[in-house]
Image: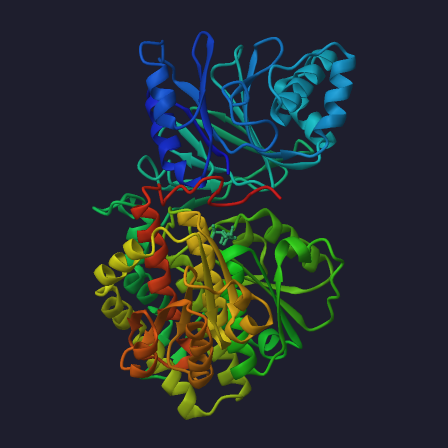
Length: 611
Ligand code: M6R
């Protein structure tokens, strides 16, 4: 989704903004632009990559100490130079960038058109900007005041950042529903959609909240609400290093993030899991243990890969905690007037913590009195802040658009929560509890071991690179792994893929099977082994190609399958932590083999901050 960077201070704004925009490229975008304000206001924008923008303005006057920059992920209007941000107001006095959607922009546009306004772009942003300018001109008030009035009329989500040619010493910003971080330097301020453009300049940041306005000068940051009351900024220290957002020798962030999983899983367990003491320490869980153990039902809301983590958690929680679980797409949940009863607990899972649908789903459930437990990766993100309690996944920044290390970290956190609840509820024997803790502790080493087979997986990706479709199958808690494997392949290699529970195959998808269709099984050792063997036989009998993820030593499936990817043996309950990784690698290598930019798959955004 759109990325926002702004700077005010003694440095040259342009290089700070361009570097920041490059750090936000991972969010997904199709055009980029910058507005620089010194004595005059200059806007440069271009469809395509940030590098294309840079190239197109070589030789222009880029000197300024105040500026705003934007990467646009098209919503209203096609990707083009004229729809790119920043937009200029009708008078040319104001420049604005925006992340979000102004839902009632058609109505506002009608009103403005009647007053004689015309528009250079198809965007909702230009409409809002002229609406603000119109209010200012008619009411003879400050830009800040006109913004406040305008926002009271606006429905939708936004972060907007404004420059006024007549006030080069000030940037004005506002937020509702989309993220905005302000970095505080010495006599300078940095604004961005997330901390990655800010981290190399300062670690002191303020996360702007919904319905807040920020008036920013070099050495002053004023926060106000829409009622014009001042709010004391809550300054936080970033716990993030620059190296975490760089590629560290890997060709792609996605590859780096897949290979980081032994460390990210270890980090997620560190300080929480103690096998010798037989304990799991998670403050968010401990402080709310009664609510969690007495939950009548757990409703998991999430999107995409996080939703798949939720499906896996459903199997685990029901199995060991004996609490009914429902897993909901946040986008569906938010609109269907869900029944929430006393004693229901909502688990909201999100890597970014900024997914618009998940945020609204939480808000809806909160209104109905549900207790919200957030499982989030990005520290300080919106979901982390609006949840009643929660646990961070500590996977570090995930830059690749396709979620990989965040997914395994989500599973680890969910497994620990389930174990903790089961222990407290005594729905698990002491022996089984300790056995699972021990198994979990061994996972980082096992991931390391399986990553040693990456060359083999790369060769398989080359072998299968020209397939047109793929079917992914799994059973039990490896069914969501099949869904995740299919999602990764679609996202990264643009190959059509579907995930199914293996037994459902006979109810439809088997019609697709012929010698051209690879059927990819997630089949580590489990209770379902024999059943999966039968399913594989059914595929082979129809000349389908079988590629199977199996546990080491599984000679039965090894003999039947055309190709295999092996993972170390692990307890069935936590086996998805291993079985998903070869599928991540397979998709990544396949996308690379096809020459695609696996970090920035077409049409996708890292965090989906609009509905
Ligand atoms: O940040 P979130 O976990 O809330 O994001 C949810 C989905 O948008 C995300 O998982 C998406 O499906 C990824 N592209 C998957 O690789």
